[in-house]
Length: 129
Image 1 (cartoon, one colour):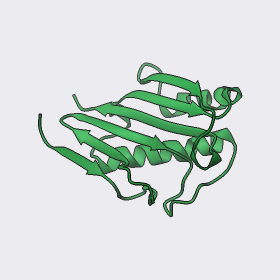
Image 2 (cartoon, one colour):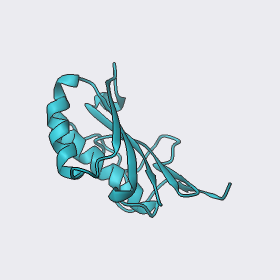
Image 3 (tube, one colour):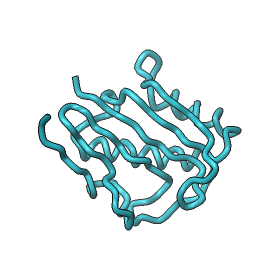
Image 4 (cartoon, one colour):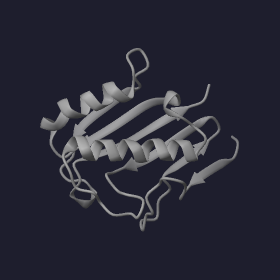
């Protein structure tokens, strides 16, 4: 099965007080935990869905980088919202981050509540081929 690598802290990643890993690498796959609008000190940064989505994606990409992966390796994104009315803003961000023809598969859903009262949470999987 190969060894696993746990990304608990790293460059550009928020400091968590929760007992989680930002990402886990197993073989050629990287599983990134839910990333929120949290700065590197571990403080929640409140903003619009677009602003929170930008910081959550920044944290997501930092977790990938610390695991030895990059944006082009992403195959799946899961986006949770506190309000699906914010989907158009996040769609525009998604289009900007992932060019046409290279967009990962994606699920979206509205969650009753997100940690810190956040508006957006990004989770995903990357694969090296």
